[in-house]
Each structure stands twice: as C-alpha cells, then as structure tokens.
Length: 279
Image 1: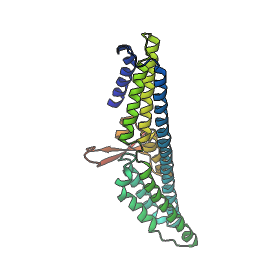
Image 2 (image 1 turned 180 degrees about the vertical axis):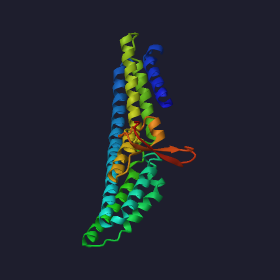
Image 3 (image 1 turned 90 degrees about the vertical axis):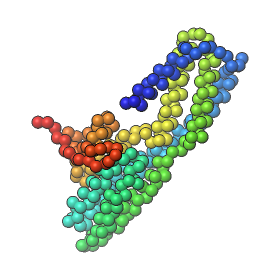
Image 4 (image 1 turned 180 degrees about the horizontal axis):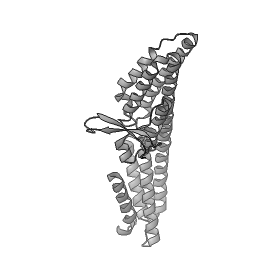
C-alpha cells in the first residue's frame, strides 16, 4: 500500500516539475543533444528489457514444467504402487504449501526438506509387474527434470541489471530530463508534454526493474500456478491468508484452504483452515 502511494506521489511530482521549475536553455541547438541522449537511453533500456524478458519467460516455463512433473510423478506412483498414493499426495501437498511460505525466487532453497521427501517416496517405489518396471524409468526421468529445472531457475532468476547499469540508466534519464526541460517556452502545452515524457521515462525504468526482479506478473506465478498442482493431486486449493488480505491472491473456488500464520514473519508456524461458502 505504501509503495503504491509513494509511486503516485512520484508521478504527481514528475508531472508538475515542468510547470514549477524556472526556464533555461542549454545550447542553441538543443534538438541535437536531445536526440543523442534519447538514442543512447533507448538502446540501453531496450537491450535490458529484451534480456530480462527472455530470462523471465524462461523462468515461467521452468516453473510450469516443474509443476507438471509433480502431477505426473503423483499419477505414476498411484499406478505403480497404489498403497503409496496417499503418501505421495501428502508429500507433494506439504511441499507446495511450504513453497508458498516464501517469495517466488527463494522457495527452492527453503523447501529442500519437503522436496527431499517427495524424491524419497518416488525413488522408493517398488514395482510389482512388468508395467510397473516400465514406468519406474518415467519417474526417474521426471525427478531428474524437476532437479534440473530447480537448478536452472536459480540461475535464471538472478538479476541482470547491476547497480552500475542502473547508475548509467539513471544518469541518462537525468540528462534526458534536463534536455526536455530546456525546450520549455512558457507554453502550458509544452510543459504538459515534458511532464508526460517524464512519466513515460519513469514507467520505462519501473518496467525494467519489475521484469529484472521478477515482480512483473509474479503473483500469477507465485499463487495461481501452484493451484494446478493442488488440483492435479486431488487436494483443495491453498493460499496464505496474508496474500488474500493484501489482494495478491484471489481464490479460484468457493471452497479452499488458507494458512494463518501465528507470528509472521518471525515464525512460519501456521494453522490451516478450510473456507467454505456460507449457507
């Protein structure tokens, strides 16, 4: 909430700056300077948007693939050794619930215990017939895929835009702003045009930051995609209550589970309750 308020204040300030700052001129041919700075800014920002978007799309693919592999492992275990069906379902359920306790990019390192339990059950399957022996290889293949995906996700999730890069982008943005301010002639329309350009530059830089830090559409990845796993293993959808309260997650069905933390963020201990539609 505070972040949104701060963002609105910044945008209002940027929009009003051209109207309150005194007029000045840098050079007789300001257009040449503005063109050069704009070109450098566009090239640099365009490069980083392309690079970060590529990483972000790859991260989406890896997460979706890992979720699909978990559902497949659950189904294969049920076929090969039906008496372990509830065991594998519970292990995957625990793993997915634990993953929602952490940020999208941190859950891999913090859910190793739950993930190891899933692998332990999958690797401990004992086939009883030829069909079971044939499907064991499928389980091994899918567990390897998940491990590979988790490893690649750790690398893909790293930020590309370093503080040094941000300093260059910020410097070009300031130079661009100064060049635009020098074009003012006291006309309200011109000042409004400059203010809108300020807002555009601000939103471009915000976009680069959100894509690079994987904030862009992260709520879909963090809360919506895991629900497919819960549904695939036959369990109710689950959401942390804090995510629902903040509006980050919206339940897909009327009946679902919520995790109520007892002392967050000091402790991740929680109570899971079932929410049902009032009758």
